[in-house]
Every structure is written in C-alpha cells, then in structure tokens.
Image (cartoon, rainbow, N blue to C red; front, top):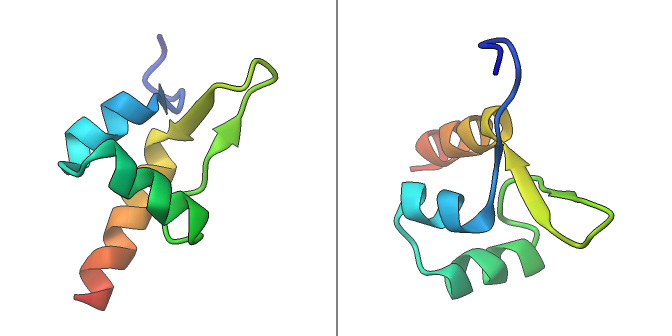
Length: 63
C-alpha cells in the first residue's frame, strides 16, 4: 500500500483506536456527531484515516 493512500478503517478498528464501546460509536453516528463515514455497496462502513484524525482534532478544539 502506498504511503499517500488514505487508509480505510473498519468500525472495530476505529472503536479500538479511540477507546469507546461500539454502541457509543453507533450512537454518535446516529446523532451526526461521529466522523464522516463511507458506506460501501455491500453495506460495510469505512472511515478514512484522515477523516478520523480531522474529527479527533475538532474534539481537541472543543475541550
């Protein structure tokens, strides 16, 4: 994989990285408070690494 390519993370990878329960992450998605996600044609959800980092930065600013 090229270093310039934006990694696509699964929900389990994201919740492990940010340290919240899966249910919390899904609630944030319902409330439009989570990172932007991509829904693939097979129904799988992915979050770009760059979007997760951007979202985390907005949480730092709000703290």
